[in-house]
Image 1: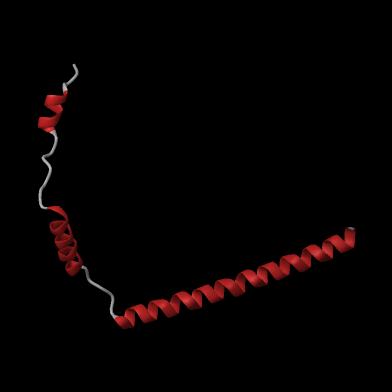
Image 2: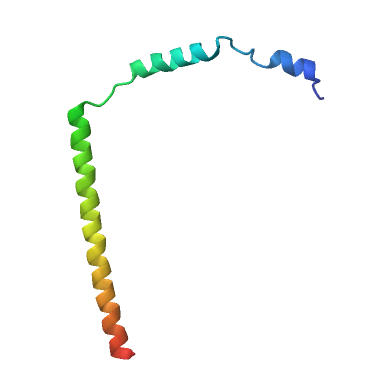
Amino acid sequence: MSMDTADQEQEAEPRRKGGLFRFFGEVRAEGRKVTWATRQEVTVSTIMVLIMALLAGVFFFLVDLILRNTMSFLLGLFG
């Protein structure tokens, strides 16, 4: 059995009114509920990310260096 459009419109959730100002008011209210990180937490997290990125860069540089030298040696040996 199919429903006609009149039945579908009645079952649909009614549109809320209030407009743009109400929306941004609700966004602002939700923003006040957020527990924001302190400056010290942000600083520590940033330093940790930079250190980990530096360590990852050094690690991949060394792996690349070892693989490049190994391949050069093997190709020079058999090539």
